[in-house]
Image 1: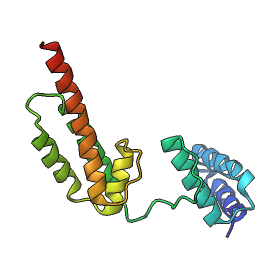
Image 2 (image 1 turned 180 degrees about the vertical axis):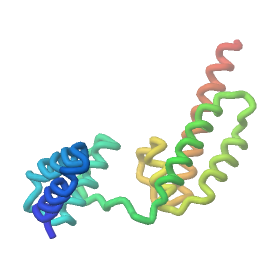
Image 3 (image 1 turned 180 degrees about the horizontal axis):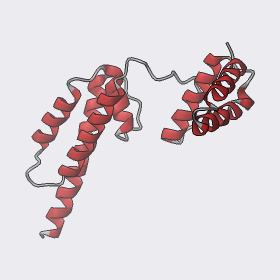
Length: 162
């Protein structure tokens, strides 16, 4: 199967929705038109292209190597919830009652249910730009980022108090 076959499928689906939903029909026709430049690609090649486009969109870096597609085994909902928890911790890091040990234990707690690929994805979504190869490394880099925020705030506070 190639993209041209997929394009035909989307046109057929658009026709099927024509009577029930013009919005769905229009969206499917737009998808079909958007596939036009990629007709000669296999689905695998197109999927690789989309992975590269996603990488560029998230990081601003054009990947030179083939980017693997996101693993189906990633629980995206769990990762999204974990990102929200980390963002909250990141904001709380500047508060006096948030100690380094609290940061360490909360990151560990947030990371506990994650598999390796989920922890790596979490690190990316939390703004870790360096390559991460393990769950432990991902959580360490996340903890370090939050601790640096606290450290910077503590330093500014101590300078202001002088």
